[in-house]
Image (cartoon, rainbow, N blue to C red; front, side):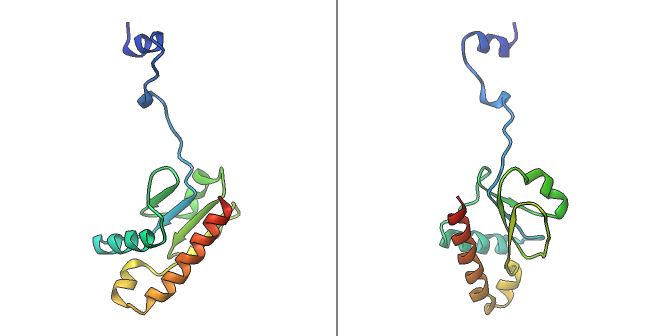
Length: 126
């Protein structure tokens, strides 16, 4: 008797047999993110009480227009440094790349304003 059948007969459902589709509400994407840039990004997000997880908030290395069909089930927000267009229910927040912020500290104020706007829109939507 297979392990799956035995557990099923006992009324036990193993979680790893289920496939879970994640529909993130916020996608964060910056290409070629260095370790220092990742630390800065996580600190910036932490300062506005946003924490990267796999369910609601997802960090993607290279997000492009081709990725939209994967995330079209609900309204999403995208924080990125690229200008992307979409017909889906997507709100983009264009922020300087963390590497640029590390190189030029004058970009911190611009990034902060964008993050606050994104957090406000994110909270109002969900």
